[in-house]
Image 1 (cartoon, rainbow, N blue to C red):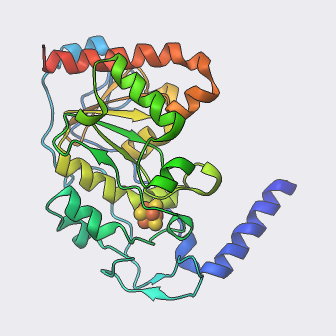
Image 2 (tube, rainbow, N blue to C red):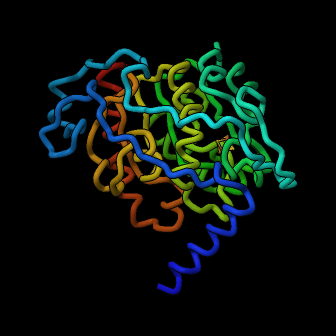
Length: 291
Ligand code: SF4
């Protein structure tokens, strides 16, 4: 109880400091992706690999208009999340506050990055060293999506660098993908302090950027790295175990989930399961694109 009181006290203090816009109540939209393949596994939208084999080749049109994402209510003005804490308010459509219309107007990844890289829509923007947009092949068939930048990524402005990045490169190599042929991005573009898990409110503010990236890249396959990434993409709560060994049909791509490389560095015992996951992912790819 004492810890809970401490957390509530701390949140109240931050609310006083940053204003109500920081802690608006977040309603996680219910997952209702009607384009998902019916499940026989008890997981809506999820298929076992054997079930999915019967559905090979089926992918939906890449459109977010039918998806479950509900844009966050746009505020009249964004209270500053700037590092100086000046209290400045940004108007919707300003570089610090890209609206959905601004995001929708992006015609390429470069265009999108230039439109959103000054974003301060959530508190993570205030403490970032660098905005980490993502990188890789703009026409990639395979997209990898992680949780958010860590210290190395924040310092360099690039996703998956440092030890976890090297491990990801090695994992890709082991299943015959090069980093250059895939596209790598994160759910949130700014580093959460101390590498904590991003809050739902931060994910909700940042998710439209990732959705636009997916819309522009139009990948055939998405590999989610870690539980936060898969929950954020499916907009559904659960453990990583709920989502592994299944194929989801989302935004026109077939999606699978495995462990985050940083988690593997902490728990090498999970490497065996990761190896099974990525082999299944490669099999999925090879069925569509046989050598
Ligand atoms: S994490 Fe996303 S929403 Fe938050 S400030 Fe960074 S770019 Fe903007």
